[in-house]
Image (cartoon, rainbow, N blue to C red):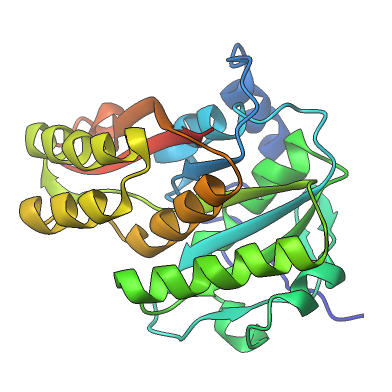
Length: 262
């Protein structure tokens, strides 16, 4: 059986399963906001920098969830939109793919595009740790303009409806501002995120363009919010915002946000 092997274990997060489990336990400690989000936005940087924020995002979904996560992450290498339809390896064990939803998506399968991409991989250990029985369908997103986000959201929503599945949650993988002064990152990122309070995707794109927010997963965020809104979600709630500078002390930072879509 083909398995998507870890590509960034030992770089973005620990390869040793005991070290990884201890780190994730630390991240999740004390984080139970009592929510049941339909989808979340989670960062995908190295765990020392963004892991705490990512744990806030996943804490918005009850740990008892045992369904399927549809993950949407940006392609950092310019590949076009595709899915992976094989199980994924983590240091904590294998996470199975959901073949029913994967086949219903009607999106090209391209395992090569997924092989070295970190934006999706860094999410999977969080899922394996908190939701050990959950399955995944990873989607790598190429073009991230509004039309592409609308198209992808429509395909995801259609697949979920045609399979008559309610045991599905959605993850948009994205960091926010990249390598800007900390004060600017916080101000501009929060301004853009504010548009998601009412899931106003048009306004979100406008604010990102206005402030030139260098978020790498604007398209995944837009697609997930649109799908969740169509399934009854009404708002997005910022659970935690932080920057890499909070860890490193550097004045030039990358911004990270944990957002629950409910």
